[in-house]
Length: 85
Image 1 (cartoon, one colour):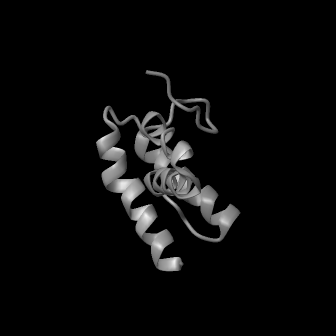
Image 2 (cartoon, helix red, strand yellow; image 1 turned 30 degrees about the horizontal axis):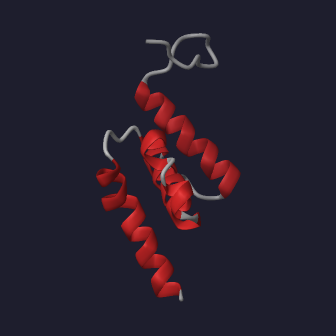
Image 3 (tube, one colour; image 1 turned 180 degrees about the vertical axis):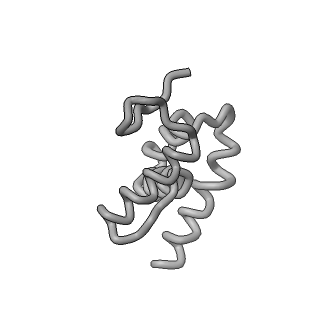
C-alpha cells in the first residue's frame, strides 16, 4: 500500500492524513472538515443535482448496490429539496 509522503519524506499514517486534511480544510474553508464529511457532501450534491448525476454516486462511494446510495444519500437529498420548495 502506498502512502502519501510527509514533509520528511516518510509515508504518512491514515491518522496523520486525517489530521492534515482537517488542518488544510480549516485553512482553506475556515472550517475543519474530515474526509468522510467531504465524501458525504459530494454524494449529497450529486444526488441533489439530478437523478442522472445521482447514478454516479455508488461508484464514487464504493457502494456495491444502488440501494445503499439511495438510502443514505438520494432519499435525504430529495427530502431536503422538497422541504426547500
